[in-house]
Image (cartoon, rainbow, N blue to C red; front, side):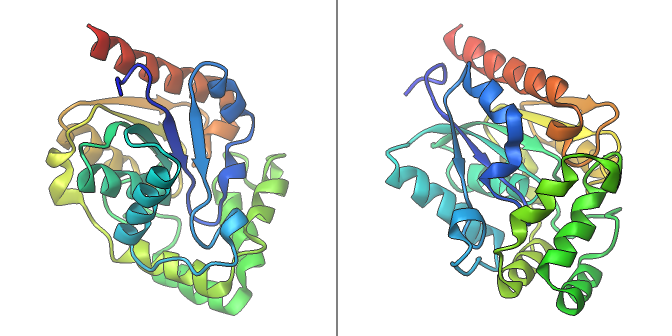
Length: 251
């Protein structure tokens, strides 16, 4: 399959589902083929137990795409999904032909996060999944609880089990590919909201300076869910990169 014809697979992050993409998905789909996945433990797969390792999530992406008849693809991952995207690209460079690393970083225990992961685990066990989704989800938006989309985003995790939510925190805590960024062979676009409270600018610099074929897009007045804070900028940024990859392949 040529890069100009390949589908794009989008992978959501922690406490999300394939519904997290909102209107941005439909707008990109008007120009490119996009397939979305619910990770084990989330969305339509909420009855399943989530893996406790990012590498296992990457294996799921590779198995699920193959089951759907998708051998080669571009991969867009948000937050924890961006970690999964890096891992997948490193595990299967022959299958991942391009990648968008969105609101993410090369280390799961994110420096500069709004709170340490172990603190999130403690509060998760004390408060439960719904309260945790509401609290953490608010930090994803520029305007926190005042953001209109926060009301439905916080509900995406209501079917997620406490064990799955905790296992994902463990998976992120124990994952790092910082030493392997130079081995990511495909073209990469880093997308980051300048007010992101989950992944600091220092983590974007690591991606930007250490991945060989990389470009960087910082979206102003946007936090962790930049596609909801600044949907127009997000859609145009992603489409520009997809077009660039296709044109570069055809040249």
